[in-house]
Amino acid sequence: DIFENFFGDGRAAPGGSGGRGRGGAPGRERGSDLRYNLEISLEEAFSGKTETIRIPTSIACEVCSGTGAKAGSKPRTCSTCGGYGRVRAAQGFFAIERTCPSCHGRGEVVDDPCTACSGAGRVNRERTLSINVPAGVDDGLRIRLAGEGESGLRGGPAGDLYVFLSIKPHPFFQRDGADLFCRVPISMVTAALSGEITVPVIDGSQTQVRIPAGTQTAKQFRIKGKGMPVLRSREVGDLYIQVSVETPQNLTKRQRELLQEFDQSASDENHPESAGFFSKVRDFFVSGAMRT
Image 1 (cartoon, rainbow, N blue to C red):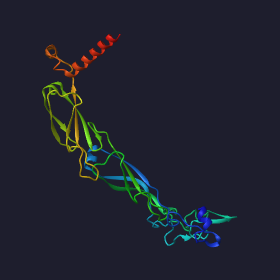
Image 2: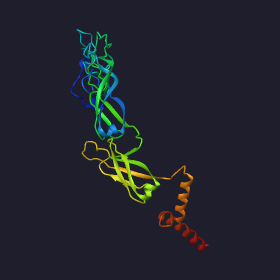
Image 3: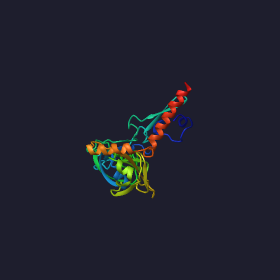
Image 4: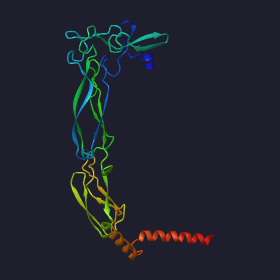
């Protein structure tokens, strides 16, 4: 504004005052942007969905068609600023520009306001919108719907609607990008002798996973192409099954006897990991004793 006033913009309002509205024509104030928080399930994020939402907002007044003036009349151009919405006043070397006090920056004056909207050109209503949620969306994604926000003042352009997505926690799937992880408990016998387990897939189906003999806790099995779709792509993530070997509980007397028999007959070859660990522990203390 200082440089514009200093060098001039080649326009002047009547009576020695001038100005120009910002962001479009004076009196046509843009409506506010709106935010809507939408929570969906992981299955819905996988397949995509169409969601119908209801939002309270301001829409253009139907009675006056958004002009703010009573039917049969229309706003007149502000005589103070000549419709620019701002006035200038010379003070010595500088000219100071400020919002027009008569029209409050709108550039127009409504002498006979619409009774339905009190001259605002918009009224409060609840709107119903249909939102297309694409497959593969992730938590925190923002969807912008241009022009679906609050209506502008006196026929001004509408703002935008921003839909922020959040995904509900899943009972057994955890997501990392397009990959899914599922922790599955297996019995000690299955882990030791091998077996086959049935695991769920995000699309609602099931698949079989072969557990090799000697499987340890935290072992992961990858099922290719059974994860989440990548947004706006044909790529699909993978499903990782992480097994957890479950220790038997509430044993009967006979079960205890069988486990004790196995323990008595077991060797280091049956427990190579623990045998190797305790062997290192012994070496540690022996070397420490020798140093002292």
